[in-house]
Length: 505
Image (cartoon, rainbow, N blue to C red; front, side):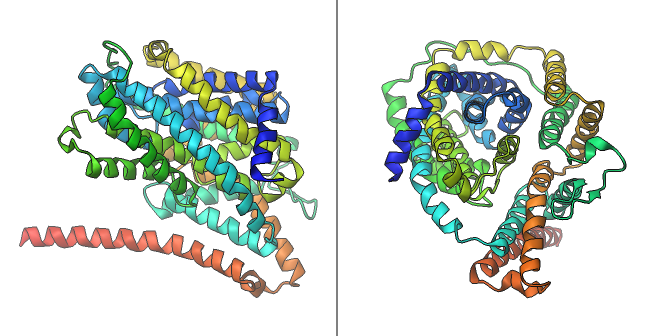
């Protein structure tokens, strides 16, 4: 069967009434939570992860994808009207969008963000559908050595891409890898690091860690910083409709943003924040009205929002085809797959094609639902921004706690939720990234298993890890991904010191 046939089959699955209901619930919940100030897509998905636990895998993952896309959509509302980006990728939207809102053009800013997100999401999801099978064919030749090299690349890129420094990223990664050693060894059956606690024999629940680190940790951190934030919500004045001039200036930006965002999102060290900044720079260079940038240029909202959402779809390429999470949100989505015993990767396309293609097709439907929800209900979403901060964060703490208890009603699980929540708060307080901790817990056991299999096959010969061109290439890329950012940072510091020395002379 061709990709087009698989996509049509997936659309048949996604159009079932219950699946449509799950998708609608997902996009509504995702948008509602994503609109709230200080809450990005990663926190949104982590917070709502327990909600999907009791559903069947297809319905749960499709709701999960709707939550993911809804969270990406909702972030633009907060950035434009409150000037509070929920994540780094929304910073660029806030630059021009909030200026437009202050000038009384908040409606068109929200409209171009919503339509741009729809266009980018549609194009990027189609690109995902036609690109994924080719990557799967390549990945099917992977053996234990290649998979271990791929895991090393994932570890290094996540550690290098997040946080203020590579050292802090690696520190967070090793915390996750340490947590991954807790439980029963899958190859020998021996208990490790369980300290006599029976509940730890199954290891640390990824759901508990993700909710604690992202929801509780982020909640505590943001709540502690709110005394210095400006909570003024810009009112939407006039119509939310875009004028003919707005459409003329926006549609090229949507297409350029989509073209920039998808490939960068699919890269191991890419991400929506890089894509949105590149798109903003491109629009500023190509605009016929460069003087408006910094004062409310509509292209500065349209392009970055399109790039942001195209990159979100792009992150699903390595996640679904290789099981490789390249962003914090993708790491939590990987946890969502694993809670049903599913491992994203090339074999998933062979063992559960209906599920995978139903999920990809549901993303197309979710985009249409989000456009229908966002444009008419913009004024309703704005009302959510007026929730007092103490109520908001108290509600998040309560919801996260009840969700975790509902999944696993155990005092030990609740204690771990609290412990990891304070750990997440502490890491954020000192500038350590959270995503590598979750990635370490998820991919650590897989990397260990593939390493031990490769060494067992080679009878303990470590050179087997670089004995094939593909494995050696992946390890070389991982080494470059670790070394190059460190060299660039040192060169940047050296240039700054030289400039300071020159100024002092």
